[in-house]
Structures are given as C-alpha cells and as structure tokens.
Image (tube, rainbow, N blue to C red; front, side):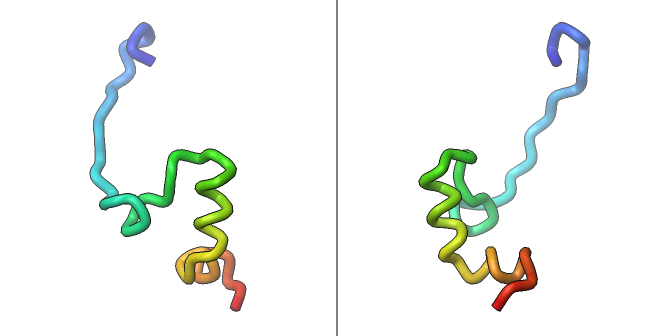
Length: 45
C-alpha cells in the first residue's frame, strides 16, 4: 500500500474485547463466539 502511495491511517476501536476482538487467529474466533456480542452480530440467541 505504501508503494502505491495509499493513505494509511489508524483508528482506535477500543481495548481488546471491548471494541476489538482479537487478531484473527483461530483461538480469537473461539473466544469471540462465546461472547454475547457475537450473538448480537449474527442475530442468534
């Protein structure tokens, strides 16, 4: 992206598990699935 002169910015989404839910590795997904917020996102109860 830098080579293509794309604009790179940062955005604070919050502390881990309070806005950000891991780095995308399988163990993060397993933890996320157990959180109430995952049910909210998928509309599952």
